[in-house]
Amino acid sequence: MKNTIKAFSKQFFGAKYESAGKSLLASVILFTALCAAEFRVEIAPFIFYLTSAIFTAGVMWQVLTGRRHMETMQGLFMLPFDNRSFVFSYVWVLAAHTLITKTLPIWALFFAVASWSAGEIALAVLCGCMACAVTAAGYQMCRKGHAVPAILWAACILAAILLIRRWAAVLAAAAISFFAGVLYLAFADAYGFYSAFIPKRAARHTGHSGSVFAYLVRYLLANKSCLINTAGLCAAACFLPLLFGEFQRLNMFPIGLAILCLNTPICTLLSGDPDLERAIRVLPGQAGQFCRKYCLFIFSVDGLVAGIYLCSWQIINGGAGFVHVITLLLFALQSAVLSAILEWKFPIRDWKTESDLWHHPRKYLVPVMMLMIALAVSFF
Image (cartoon, rainbow, N blue to C red; front, side, top):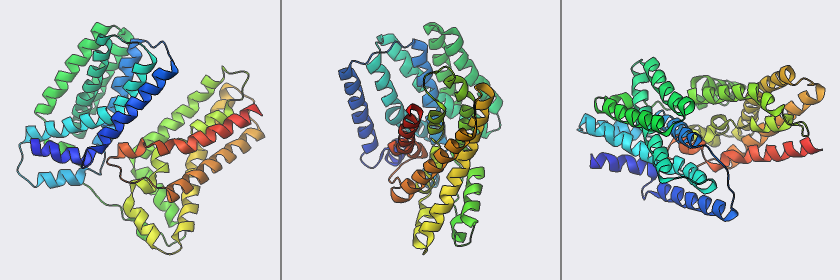
């Protein structure tokens, strides 16, 4: 068990566990900066618990569905191992990676802007640990075709946090779910966490006109993470006009366009597929051709989401006209051009998991730039 934990720890945290050190340093800096600024907010405890559970579960699911660490798992499967020890070692390392590198900065943010009792902090930490165990158990259940019980399980936890909102109910739901998840994992199959690692080879036809765009479309349709993220943006596009309708003194339409350009999996396609990047950079004349098709691809996806946003804006707030259409096209084009240039010139390197890639700070550069432009358009 010790060797398995060590092997997975070096895969997720780095050879010298540098990812954990960077996360701890970032959390301390964030906490210190906010405390020094004396920025305080009143936050209900159930929001703290809900954030700890949902955010941690989302990141844990991303790590479980990742493909980069499957080669390490495949190598360990070639050696003799105890099934239960392997499962707990794997889940423990994934949970530690999720809590330390992703959830800890969120906790630091909550700790800095609001006052919490020791019991509330302990319960929030328990919710995070529970989310890791339940997500791992739910992943196994979904792989076995038992998705409905997993969804009902998650719904019961959310109901205890959102509807009851009592610390005793949240504590009971978190404790029972944590021990139920651990008990389920005690009888889980280690091979249930393994997904065959199949290298992508669609880049070999990039010399033909249009094949790059066709590959990108096939990548979008075959990649569940891209589809889920795009579907989430489409859902946000439907509800943002309802939220922005309350602002009367500021034109919020461009700001919504800036928010909707945050499609991380699509904007990190080369960073997430080093084999494709090497193949494209080796072939002559591919830089311009690929970047043009990649820009067109991002523009098409952003334009689709922005089109839904425009239709929803017209239905809810009204007043959409030719200026809104031109603004939509310009924002989608500008976002696509900046994203393609950034991905080609400055791809993200040395990431350990897909979650690290999608949560990299670089993902916010284009949305922040677009938000600044949107604010200028809104004011003037």
